[in-house]
Image: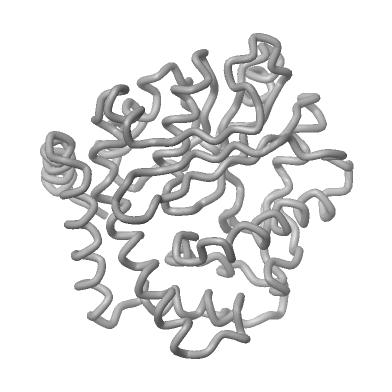
Length: 294
Protein backbone atom coordinates (compact mmCIF):
# COMPACT_ATOMS: atom_id res chain seq x y z
CA UNK A 1 0.00 0.00 0.00
CA UNK A 2 1.30 3.45 -0.93
CA UNK A 3 1.98 5.87 1.90
CA UNK A 4 0.40 9.29 1.84
CA UNK A 5 3.60 10.80 0.43
CA UNK A 6 3.98 7.95 -2.03
CA UNK A 7 0.46 8.61 -3.33
CA UNK A 8 1.15 12.33 -3.62
CA UNK A 9 4.33 11.62 -5.56
CA UNK A 10 2.51 9.21 -7.90
CA UNK A 11 -0.26 11.74 -8.54
CA UNK A 12 2.29 14.49 -9.17
CA UNK A 13 4.15 12.33 -11.68
CA UNK A 14 0.93 11.46 -13.49
CA UNK A 15 0.03 15.15 -13.79
CA UNK A 16 3.51 15.84 -15.13
CA UNK A 17 3.32 12.98 -17.64
CA UNK A 18 -0.04 14.33 -18.85
CA UNK A 19 1.82 17.40 -20.14
CA UNK A 20 4.25 15.29 -22.16
CA UNK A 21 3.63 13.71 -25.58
CA UNK A 22 1.65 10.47 -25.33
CA UNK A 23 4.21 8.58 -27.41
CA UNK A 24 7.02 9.47 -25.01
CA UNK A 25 5.05 8.33 -21.95
CA UNK A 26 3.94 5.11 -23.66
CA UNK A 27 7.51 4.27 -24.67
CA UNK A 28 8.76 5.07 -21.17
CA UNK A 29 6.16 2.71 -19.67
CA UNK A 30 7.00 0.04 -22.22
CA UNK A 31 10.69 0.22 -21.36
CA UNK A 32 10.02 0.18 -17.63
CA UNK A 33 7.80 -2.88 -18.08
CA UNK A 34 10.55 -4.68 -20.00
CA UNK A 35 13.03 -3.86 -17.25
CA UNK A 36 10.78 -5.03 -14.43
CA UNK A 37 10.00 -8.26 -16.26
CA UNK A 38 13.69 -9.19 -16.08
CA UNK A 39 13.42 -9.32 -12.28
CA UNK A 40 11.77 -12.50 -10.91
CA UNK A 41 8.59 -11.48 -9.08
CA UNK A 42 5.28 -12.77 -7.76
CA UNK A 43 3.37 -10.91 -10.50
CA UNK A 44 5.48 -12.47 -13.23
CA UNK A 45 4.74 -15.93 -11.79
CA UNK A 46 1.01 -15.11 -11.74
CA UNK A 47 1.11 -14.17 -15.44
CA UNK A 48 2.82 -17.44 -16.37
CA UNK A 49 0.44 -19.49 -14.20
CA UNK A 50 -2.61 -17.91 -15.84
CA UNK A 51 -1.26 -18.41 -19.35
CA UNK A 52 -0.34 -22.04 -18.66
CA UNK A 53 -3.84 -22.76 -17.34
CA UNK A 54 -5.62 -21.05 -20.24
CA UNK A 55 -3.30 -22.07 -23.08
CA UNK A 56 -1.72 -25.43 -22.16
CA UNK A 57 -1.14 -26.12 -25.86
CA UNK A 58 1.26 -23.18 -26.23
CA UNK A 59 4.99 -23.76 -26.38
CA UNK A 60 7.20 -22.34 -23.63
CA UNK A 61 8.55 -19.83 -26.16
CA UNK A 62 5.05 -18.61 -27.07
CA UNK A 63 4.09 -18.28 -23.42
CA UNK A 64 7.28 -16.38 -22.61
CA UNK A 65 6.72 -13.97 -25.51
CA UNK A 66 3.13 -13.17 -24.51
CA UNK A 67 4.04 -12.90 -20.82
CA UNK A 68 6.78 -10.37 -21.49
CA UNK A 69 4.60 -8.32 -23.85
CA UNK A 70 1.80 -8.34 -21.30
CA UNK A 71 4.07 -7.19 -18.49
CA UNK A 72 5.20 -4.29 -20.65
CA UNK A 73 1.58 -3.42 -21.44
CA UNK A 74 0.55 -3.64 -17.78
CA UNK A 75 3.30 -1.34 -16.47
CA UNK A 76 2.76 1.01 -19.39
CA UNK A 77 -0.94 1.23 -18.57
CA UNK A 78 -0.16 2.68 -15.13
CA UNK A 79 1.88 5.51 -16.65
CA UNK A 80 -0.81 6.11 -19.25
CA UNK A 81 -3.27 6.89 -16.49
CA UNK A 82 -1.68 10.33 -16.85
CA UNK A 83 -3.38 11.21 -20.13
CA UNK A 84 -6.48 9.18 -19.27
CA UNK A 85 -7.06 10.96 -15.96
CA UNK A 86 -5.67 14.41 -16.67
CA UNK A 87 -5.61 14.81 -20.46
CA UNK A 88 -8.14 17.15 -22.06
CA UNK A 89 -11.17 15.92 -24.00
CA UNK A 90 -9.51 17.23 -27.16
CA UNK A 91 -6.40 15.15 -26.49
CA UNK A 92 -8.48 12.04 -25.82
CA UNK A 93 -10.40 12.55 -29.07
CA UNK A 94 -7.10 12.50 -30.96
CA UNK A 95 -5.86 9.39 -29.17
CA UNK A 96 -8.98 7.19 -29.09
CA UNK A 97 -10.78 5.72 -32.10
CA UNK A 98 -14.44 4.89 -31.57
CA UNK A 99 -15.79 1.75 -33.22
CA UNK A 100 -19.37 1.31 -32.03
CA UNK A 101 -22.06 -1.07 -33.26
CA UNK A 102 -24.74 1.10 -31.64
CA UNK A 103 -25.53 4.81 -31.64
CA UNK A 104 -24.19 5.99 -28.29
CA UNK A 105 -25.94 9.36 -28.62
CA UNK A 106 -29.38 7.85 -29.30
CA UNK A 107 -31.79 9.72 -26.98
CA UNK A 108 -34.00 6.61 -26.95
CA UNK A 109 -31.26 4.28 -25.76
CA UNK A 110 -33.02 1.67 -23.60
CA UNK A 111 -31.78 0.84 -20.09
CA UNK A 112 -28.25 -0.41 -20.75
CA UNK A 113 -25.47 -2.11 -18.84
CA UNK A 114 -22.18 -1.40 -20.60
CA UNK A 115 -20.00 -4.36 -19.69
CA UNK A 116 -16.26 -3.62 -19.74
CA UNK A 117 -13.56 -6.29 -19.78
CA UNK A 118 -10.17 -6.08 -18.14
CA UNK A 119 -7.86 -5.60 -21.06
CA UNK A 120 -5.10 -3.08 -20.39
CA UNK A 121 -7.03 -0.38 -22.25
CA UNK A 122 -10.11 -0.58 -20.01
CA UNK A 123 -9.39 2.73 -18.29
CA UNK A 124 -9.13 4.65 -21.56
CA UNK A 125 -12.14 2.81 -22.95
CA UNK A 126 -14.36 3.49 -19.94
CA UNK A 127 -13.52 7.19 -19.75
CA UNK A 128 -14.04 7.69 -23.48
CA UNK A 129 -17.28 5.71 -23.45
CA UNK A 130 -18.55 8.05 -20.76
CA UNK A 131 -17.47 11.02 -22.91
CA UNK A 132 -19.04 9.56 -26.08
CA UNK A 133 -22.42 8.94 -24.45
CA UNK A 134 -22.90 12.71 -24.13
CA UNK A 135 -25.10 12.21 -21.09
CA UNK A 136 -24.79 11.44 -17.43
CA UNK A 137 -24.12 7.79 -16.73
CA UNK A 138 -23.37 5.59 -13.74
CA UNK A 139 -20.09 3.78 -13.20
CA UNK A 140 -18.98 1.20 -10.64
CA UNK A 141 -15.47 1.13 -9.26
CA UNK A 142 -13.38 -1.17 -7.10
CA UNK A 143 -12.11 0.71 -4.00
CA UNK A 144 -8.34 1.26 -3.84
CA UNK A 145 -6.14 0.59 -0.83
CA UNK A 146 -4.95 4.21 -0.79
CA UNK A 147 -7.82 6.67 -0.10
CA UNK A 148 -5.94 9.65 -1.54
CA UNK A 149 -5.31 7.89 -4.84
CA UNK A 150 -8.90 6.65 -4.88
CA UNK A 151 -10.31 10.17 -4.60
CA UNK A 152 -8.17 11.35 -7.51
CA UNK A 153 -9.16 8.33 -9.61
CA UNK A 154 -12.87 8.85 -8.87
CA UNK A 155 -12.70 12.53 -9.82
CA UNK A 156 -10.85 11.73 -13.05
CA UNK A 157 -13.26 8.98 -14.06
CA UNK A 158 -16.26 11.16 -13.27
CA UNK A 159 -15.13 14.29 -15.13
CA UNK A 160 -17.35 13.71 -18.18
CA UNK A 161 -20.53 13.29 -16.17
CA UNK A 162 -20.30 9.88 -14.48
CA UNK A 163 -21.87 9.16 -11.12
CA UNK A 164 -19.47 6.86 -9.27
CA UNK A 165 -20.47 4.10 -6.88
CA UNK A 166 -18.40 1.48 -5.07
CA UNK A 167 -19.03 -2.14 -6.02
CA UNK A 168 -19.90 -2.81 -2.38
CA UNK A 169 -22.94 -0.51 -2.63
CA UNK A 170 -23.81 -1.33 -6.21
CA UNK A 171 -27.02 -3.36 -6.65
CA UNK A 172 -29.56 -0.89 -5.26
CA UNK A 173 -27.81 2.07 -6.91
CA UNK A 174 -27.50 0.36 -10.30
CA UNK A 175 -31.19 -0.52 -10.34
CA UNK A 176 -32.06 3.07 -9.51
CA UNK A 177 -29.84 4.31 -12.34
CA UNK A 178 -31.43 1.89 -14.79
CA UNK A 179 -34.90 2.94 -13.64
CA UNK A 180 -33.90 6.52 -14.46
CA UNK A 181 -32.68 5.30 -17.91
CA UNK A 182 -29.12 6.20 -17.02
CA UNK A 183 -26.51 4.02 -18.81
CA UNK A 184 -24.35 2.05 -16.39
CA UNK A 185 -20.74 0.95 -16.86
CA UNK A 186 -19.34 -1.97 -14.90
CA UNK A 187 -16.75 -4.74 -15.09
CA UNK A 188 -17.36 -8.28 -13.87
CA UNK A 189 -14.58 -10.48 -15.26
CA UNK A 190 -12.36 -10.60 -12.18
CA UNK A 191 -12.29 -12.83 -9.11
CA UNK A 192 -14.26 -11.03 -6.40
CA UNK A 193 -14.75 -14.11 -4.24
CA UNK A 194 -17.43 -16.79 -3.99
CA UNK A 195 -20.23 -14.47 -2.83
CA UNK A 196 -22.73 -13.82 -5.65
CA UNK A 197 -20.60 -15.97 -7.96
CA UNK A 198 -20.68 -19.38 -9.58
CA UNK A 199 -18.04 -21.71 -11.02
CA UNK A 200 -18.23 -21.96 -14.80
CA UNK A 201 -15.54 -22.73 -17.40
CA UNK A 202 -13.09 -20.09 -18.58
CA UNK A 203 -10.73 -21.65 -21.11
CA UNK A 204 -11.87 -25.01 -19.66
CA UNK A 205 -10.83 -24.03 -16.11
CA UNK A 206 -13.64 -23.90 -13.48
CA UNK A 207 -13.58 -20.18 -12.65
CA UNK A 208 -15.28 -18.09 -9.99
CA UNK A 209 -17.52 -15.81 -12.06
CA UNK A 210 -19.93 -13.11 -10.92
CA UNK A 211 -23.64 -13.67 -11.54
CA UNK A 212 -24.52 -10.02 -10.90
CA UNK A 213 -24.63 -8.93 -14.56
CA UNK A 214 -27.43 -11.30 -15.54
CA UNK A 215 -29.37 -10.60 -12.36
CA UNK A 216 -29.11 -6.82 -12.71
CA UNK A 217 -30.09 -7.01 -16.37
CA UNK A 218 -33.13 -9.13 -15.52
CA UNK A 219 -34.42 -7.01 -12.64
CA UNK A 220 -33.53 -3.72 -14.37
CA UNK A 221 -34.97 -4.81 -17.76
CA UNK A 222 -31.67 -3.77 -19.32
CA UNK A 223 -29.76 -4.77 -22.41
CA UNK A 224 -26.11 -5.76 -21.96
CA UNK A 225 -23.60 -4.14 -24.31
CA UNK A 226 -19.97 -5.35 -24.11
CA UNK A 227 -17.08 -2.97 -24.77
CA UNK A 228 -13.30 -3.33 -24.97
CA UNK A 229 -10.50 -0.78 -24.81
CA UNK A 230 -7.68 -1.86 -27.13
CA UNK A 231 -4.15 -0.43 -27.17
CA UNK A 232 -3.17 0.24 -30.79
CA UNK A 233 0.25 -0.77 -32.12
CA UNK A 234 3.13 1.64 -32.71
CA UNK A 235 2.05 3.94 -29.85
CA UNK A 236 -0.89 5.27 -31.88
CA UNK A 237 -3.34 5.41 -28.96
CA UNK A 238 -6.44 3.30 -28.38
CA UNK A 239 -9.58 1.88 -29.95
CA UNK A 240 -12.85 1.75 -28.02
CA UNK A 241 -14.88 -1.08 -29.49
CA UNK A 242 -18.55 -1.21 -28.49
CA UNK A 243 -20.36 -4.39 -29.53
CA UNK A 244 -24.00 -5.12 -30.28
CA UNK A 245 -26.25 -5.96 -27.32
CA UNK A 246 -26.23 -9.62 -26.41
CA UNK A 247 -29.24 -11.48 -27.81
CA UNK A 248 -31.36 -13.63 -25.50
CA UNK A 249 -29.60 -12.33 -22.42
CA UNK A 250 -30.21 -12.75 -19.57
CA UNK A 251 -31.70 -16.23 -19.67
CA UNK A 252 -32.53 -16.37 -15.96
CA UNK A 253 -30.05 -19.20 -15.48
CA UNK A 254 -27.13 -17.80 -13.44
CA UNK A 255 -24.67 -20.41 -14.68
CA UNK A 256 -25.62 -19.96 -18.32
CA UNK A 257 -25.44 -16.17 -18.08
CA UNK A 258 -22.03 -16.27 -16.35
CA UNK A 259 -20.78 -18.73 -18.94
CA UNK A 260 -21.90 -16.34 -21.70
CA UNK A 261 -19.57 -13.68 -20.33
CA UNK A 262 -16.61 -16.06 -20.19
CA UNK A 263 -17.37 -17.39 -23.69
CA UNK A 264 -17.29 -13.84 -25.04
CA UNK A 265 -13.85 -13.38 -23.47
CA UNK A 266 -12.66 -16.65 -24.96
CA UNK A 267 -13.46 -15.19 -28.38
CA UNK A 268 -11.78 -11.83 -27.77
CA UNK A 269 -8.62 -12.70 -25.82
CA UNK A 270 -6.93 -14.74 -28.61
CA UNK A 271 -7.15 -11.65 -30.84
CA UNK A 272 -4.73 -9.81 -28.51
CA UNK A 273 -3.67 -12.17 -25.71
CA UNK A 274 -0.89 -9.88 -24.51
CA UNK A 275 -3.47 -7.23 -23.56
CA UNK A 276 -5.69 -9.20 -21.20
CA UNK A 277 -5.03 -8.55 -17.52
CA UNK A 278 -3.05 -11.69 -16.69
CA UNK A 279 -1.33 -10.08 -13.69
CA UNK A 280 -4.61 -10.52 -11.79
CA UNK A 281 -5.18 -13.77 -9.87
CA UNK A 282 -8.13 -14.77 -12.03
CA UNK A 283 -8.23 -18.27 -10.49
CA UNK A 284 -7.67 -17.28 -6.86
CA UNK A 285 -10.99 -18.67 -5.59
CA UNK A 286 -11.17 -22.40 -6.23
CA UNK A 287 -14.10 -24.84 -6.06
CA UNK A 288 -14.42 -26.49 -2.65
CA UNK A 289 -11.65 -29.03 -2.18
CA UNK A 290 -9.48 -27.78 -5.07
CA UNK A 291 -5.93 -26.62 -4.16
CA UNK A 292 -4.65 -23.13 -4.90
CA UNK A 293 -3.07 -22.73 -8.31
CA UNK A 294 -0.84 -19.87 -7.17
